[in-house]
Image 1 (cartoon, rainbow, N blue to C red):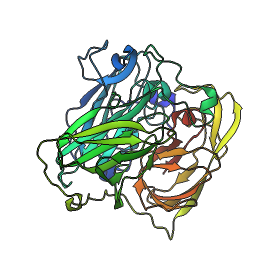
Image 2 (spheres, rainbow, N blue to C red; image 1 turned 90 degrees about the vertical axis):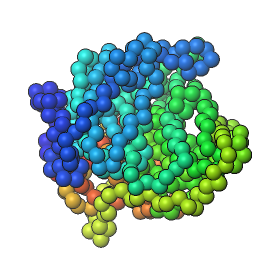
Image 3 (cartoon, helix red, strand yellow; image 1 turned 30 degrees about the vertical axis):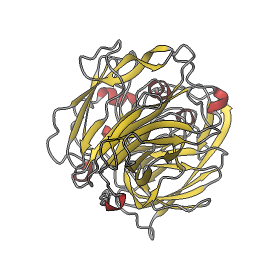
Length: 471
């Protein structure tokens, strides 16, 4: 399949045909029935109170049509979809720069993936684009631009997606947490999005840490009840080591998929792009507080709190029914073809200009090739895959830093690691440790060009990006 270029896409009627299904995958990932009226997501600038210093200006977000671009909109809405049911959204852009929406973790048609000039054109100021797809999987996902990503994501454009399944077990309450940093100065205004010396290492950390755009928010939940805590790390840099104090927390899903065996939350690492579903058994005493902490670093940091209210429901997490598995194809390991992927640093140099913004540096590479942008043009794919065939990604991290590697459009199963015991998790984002070699198996069951990149955005934008082509 030829790569869609800027010129070809601008000539094509991509927007008018956005409700169509992806080539060759109508039966599996396409529309099973007519799409509903689109949910309007208006990209705009706003302001919000994030610190005690006052209002932060020039925040980017999505709001409803008619929202006040000077301050009427806040955190991007939690988008709720239903497994197996059509969903539609209309992106309208009132920003002073182009944008798109990528639906992180959703296995949907390639033309809906939101990567500019690989799967769709820019959505320019004043224009709109219609997205329509049927999510095949239940779980916790998220959405963000794939254009000028460090600025747009760093200034607010990260939102959570909840895909519900009627067969899910019953919880007494649900709390959704969108975890992200902001790079703000003492006056509460944005400062430089990155520092080159940090981009060449772990990435540039934010100065203000929030959950749902608040510092250490607290939510009420039924005493003695079972709470579904959905967590999405939408930050551009930060890796968390999460722990729950004051309540029993059980991991039930990672990256939208049920874990093979549930386990207690105990210092679990989760990086940019990843999601975590917890079953939290609230304390029985009214007023008792459970605290979600990040203990990565020298000082534990409170992320959010849950406070028990009312008479104890006396629920038992052991009574909670299992989550249904998502219909992800299982790879045939006996015939799977292996693909070598080496994550490495590269000699510092100025990258070629990218149609979707460049940071002006090239620090990172995949298989010795540094790509500075969101699109692969004119570079050849990392590998050309045959539709329906099984593959094993052999990822090797030869750097001293951790990289959350995300594959668009498909999910993989973790097979093995050279440094630790791993569960056979089904996921789309894997946190590769320094000097780790890992095997990830998947079936190439979604046609098109699909990005493979580090989700520490500075790493992505300074070279650690590639793509595979399914034909």
